[in-house]
Length: 392
Image (cartoon, rainbow, N blue to C red; front, side, top):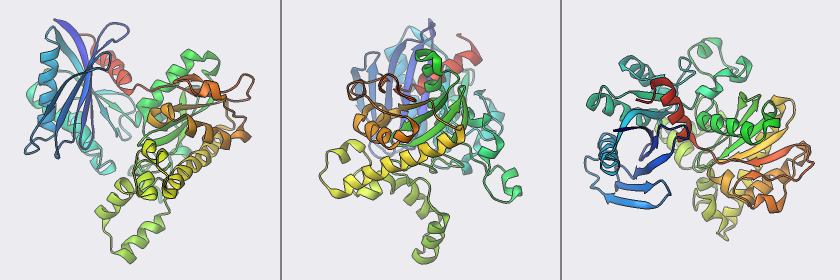
């Protein structure tokens, strides 16, 4: 049997998966997802070229993350009968203060990660569900947790603090930052395609349904827009981003809203969806003639531009801006708007280059460069997993 490494990325209503060979280039063998868990579960399987090779639909009754995990394992075994999993890597949003690097999961590590659920209640429980299922059903199978917070653990202490009583800081109320697996890949990839920027001051814009910025120098995180939770910072698809805490107190006092109602408001009902009242999808808003859609796009671009200024201040200047993730990689118009708003930082865009799917999109001779680099979080997870457990 030929060894392979599998990657699972579990969300609140889906589990994405990918299977890669363990050769040097980690060739993609199979990928897909189970979506709409709890509503109308559907399995989609794609081959290495991205062609859909199988779909299945399931009854929602009793179809939870554990069943979804077993379903994925079953279809992978059917589709790749000559391969055996050497290990499985998982994206875990929160590693807390104890996990600044990927960790091989055992019962003690899992228990530790479960204590972090209050810090990421909408993400952490779902990230851990497949791990728990596989530990019970395949205890000998090595599993590795890769953390979205780990990349930012090297930030200066001042960049991680809130201006709150020290006792709360010591309890872990810190700016953790997220999207770290994406930033790790993009930072490394930038150093490969533009070696002259390896030690540079760079702001990377991870713009998708979840959105954030990260300031790096020499490939190390210096500051980020996300903080204690993944709702702080930029406006996102359905998340409000940074908001005056007084608004939340007002909602409690004047609207009678409780914690879970406020949580839903700031995570699920705000952002592009809340401002437009139409959609959380930038593509749908771009196709709409409604003034509310235009306002949502305007506000998104404004917030990105404003926060790029904050990241540049943390770096003491800017040598390059990198766009990544769904919006960052695919929305040339949004990129042009953001760069136009950052002209004071020496940024400019070349329209012809900006039409390309990746690469440098700024003109020659610019003071600061602009790049588009597609992210690949699952590849980072696969690499970390094999580095910890070997190739089987």
